[in-house]
Image (cartoon, rainbow over all chains, first blue to last red; front, side, top):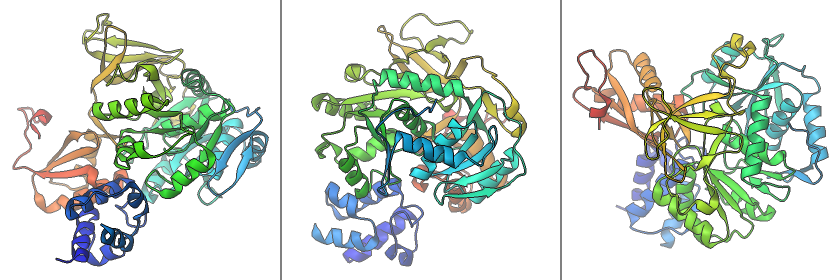
Length: 74
Length: 446
């Protein structure tokens, strides 16, 4: 599974979305992606990719595209 | 209350606007100019300048607001409109007025403010707060937190939530500054605004502190921060310890508090210099209040470490509830005594600890969610389905016997409560355990 596919999976599970919706997900626009959802997402990404996210990245990751860019850094 | 007779900056908004106290007073009175005194107005609020002006404008001018979230769903708003028939709705997000009735229902002279009992499940039940309630609680908070004009509090809690409102009340009645932002702690803009204006304090519910911990808050340089307050549910012991330690080592205060909307906001606080040696405690009663513990026979408990129901006496005990417009004419039904529904004990030094709840509700992200009410709502909406609600704070378990409705039930509860769906877990079990008389045996649900 590619990183992108893995990330789509995480978004689908965390926010209850379809894969197409997952790729367009944006903080505060996607219903379940509020501050609580954000913590859930960050935890799921850390677990899924076996990484530990920096606080600055947690604050800046506010869309699917940004999540993709973020993961590429680790 | 809200005389605003101070100098200096009263409010800074994250859209760049700044108002001095005289400017705020002007804006508030201008907002209230065309609204008759003693009329009921719904305020749909966000943490922004317009919402603040409307709230203060209403309180200063004898207008009684019902505070609601600007993002309230249409069904819930309609239920409140039907039940209370306000003169008008003011939307602080859009700065717009909607006149909805020719006049206002009669309001009791003492009535100042109406609030929902936190994250209600759409029930139109309200808490009636008086001018005396707000004045008394505000004065206590200013005293025990030692607030003065040098404080700058940043918003972290909604204005329609009693804890968020108490922060505004206490700061704008001691000449301090409110930093208004609708951004949350998970957004970079929040921290930029925080640092730019040198915030000295913020408040948070237990979940706020979990998020701060997740953000490695302790690594963040916040030289202007003096005080963090916590209320809205019992914080977990390890988290209490972590923040109390951080505060002690960095010359800051961490203040655990306890309160209810029914007591305006606050009933107790743990003095910050005791935060480390009284971990898990919600502290001592606020100035002007009195606690007692009542045992099952109605007798007052005088021994430490004995659990009883917590009863609070003080001028901040609210008038009572309202369920319809007629109730708004009612006077004080409590006489300054609040039976909290929380089970508590005190230690040999007189510090109080919450040990349980008499009523079946959970605190989810600081919002009170009634388990029986949630059950009733689900059963009403999904006929022929048996269910039971249980779980712990921040995680409700909904037990059902039929898996096919799981997703729909979760969607339904999320819509009703406006809370993140991960707070609700659907558990499918073969049968809901019941006793001979058909009552659910909640202790057997896991």
